[in-house]
Image (cartoon, rainbow, N blue to C red; front, side, top):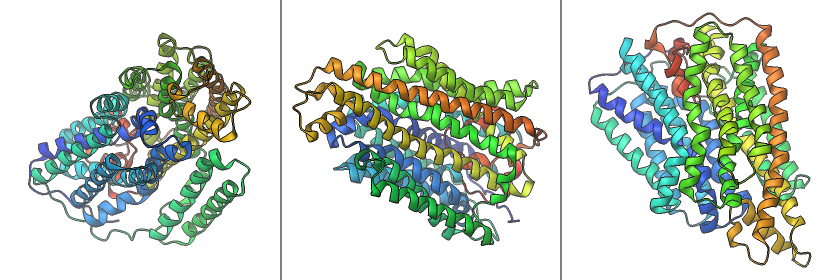
Length: 542
């Protein structure tokens, strides 16, 4: 096992302030970008396939690089790694704000995901070796709360930035805030050393995994323009699946694999991994694309949309607290986690009745249930997963949970975007004049889906709004159905195996897992301190 380095000198309070600022900023890339999509489309073009990659590119690289970000921290040192990640994230923000077209913006967003993965991995690891005892508990409590605030307020922050400076204001905000964070890290004077005898990074596995996930998501995203049955779509997806098989083989023969695939033989671990998958289906898809629906159908401005989306995101901050309190009072994890997935069923089904009319009060109930379901899930999954495996595998499992969380979000959001384009596009074409050319029809469909109904001429906008609302309903039912199936599977798998014992109360080692977790899931560590702290001495792939 690698020897753990420790931080030296400096002002820990300034370092904590720097890290908290960073973990507020990064999650806005997850929850806030959806608010900007209609504005980006109006400025850079409304090609849905390219527009989807503003979101998908960030999610993809965040997921993939989370596997190696912990190893980067070990090899460079946490402080150097944090400065590197902050620099990459800042550069990506500037490039995004200056992007002259969607291709450049997509590439910049992918670069931002790389920086975000490194920032999160190194931030938590640096806190863990800087603070101890009660100070560590307070630091990680603030760490998790900051991440939850960034996620919950992401749509509102984005709306305010758009109101002040257009859609580029979001990325200028990200860049400037991260510059301040990096400057505070330097000013803190805190230093650390690389971990001695750190295991070799499995670059080969990382490259193959990245290529596999990229090809699958690219195939799904391009299905909108190429068609689901096109040779291009099928070829990309099949190639991605084949590369995933190669990745599996490599992990069996590599001395220091990114993932020990034997862990997936545990029914309990598989059940826990399905919870973030359900969250991607039942929450992240709607968090990403409901703002576009509201823009297109309700014709609300960005500020109003940010306020509406707070109804969904604020419960995410409260959910981990409720999950921790319930579990601390003896409520089994299978009930809490099964219930969290079940809330997606109720919320999505409720939206089919209330959520497609231009009536904000109708959104309150279903949005609260969806946000609470997601918050309850992130309140337990990581700690339960780490506690269900041997100590020497804890860091790897932390990375696995994080990768599944972000990887499933990237894939599911891409699938939802393609389905939205296909289903809503079909509804829109039914109300278009028959004498329109295919190209003209495609242009109108693209504008409706990207929130630009007001710019469509020659067609009654009321009929287009109705078509969008009608097209969304079957997708909501699909979300409810998938969530119902996952609820049953999660409950069955978790009830089959006993819960792990309560983790150690020693907060000094609370969290390589926190460091690696995605900005959504990270709130758990602070709110209940159930993360198995043993993970800090392990390789931290995320």
